[in-house]
Image 1 (cartoon, protein in one colour):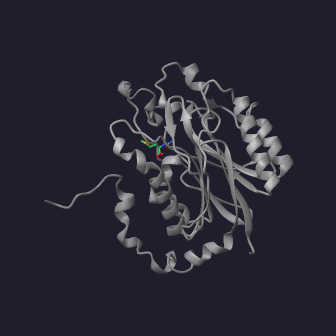
Image 2 (image 1 turned 180 degrees about the vertical axis):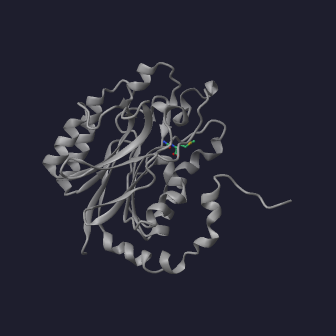
Image 3 (image 1 turned 45 degrees about the horizontal axis):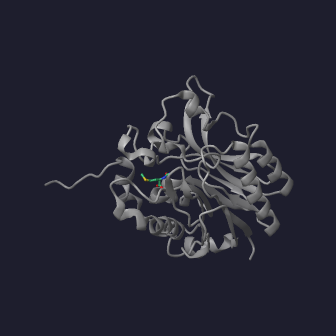
Length: 313
Ligand code: CDT
């Protein structure tokens, strides 16, 4: 093994609305410390890891909404996590709600950062694929998916970056269902894709999908890993949270699509595996050798339109 890396997914159980950010950050630090005690070098935390999954609620009051967002990263509350990571020399991926006040109007994004083992932010990603709706579906109660109300689509694309002698990238929750997410990073040579998620078991009106959520979770991440010859680490926030159930099944997936580790609870749980980034080449250099086998002249419909273009009647 020449480019080995010890990676972890730090799954989190439910975060009640009443839990303070300081309490939540102490849970993150406990998971980080467990990782460090095992020799883990990089920990992937969930999407929106600093609060409950607030897009389930319709909120009108700006102060209520702002309470879930971070105008600074690190903030006063999250600084202890950054400090502990630096002391332990452990890097991490952290999902949070970002309030960007750098321009003339404030903007809100569903964001993740990669923080290197030196405790500084090395890369940022803003969620591109926002699920759900922006209208108030009152009869859905606390099972709404109001990401389109609270966030705007990310404006940073799918950047990859060099760290740990490899090429790393990030995605957030719903992004993991889209092959484009993985391919755009695959085209930049990505070797480890870090993904945090909050996925409800139940979508109102579709009870027939409840038992499939776990299947789709792994199906998407395993396919994305294999088809791009990249490791994928997916970290869930899960369990019974504010009246709704979120799936778990955090996973570490090899570039062959094989499952290397999987969470077995719906609580705070750290899973880890030693990966070999050199194994990406088994897939990237053969069956999915893009340079040799891709035929981009036939793929233009993918970037020319978002919607389906039906054939003439
Ligand atoms: N957080 C997030 O993106 N959740 C979505 C729910 C989809 S249901 C409209 C997901 O893809 O898991």
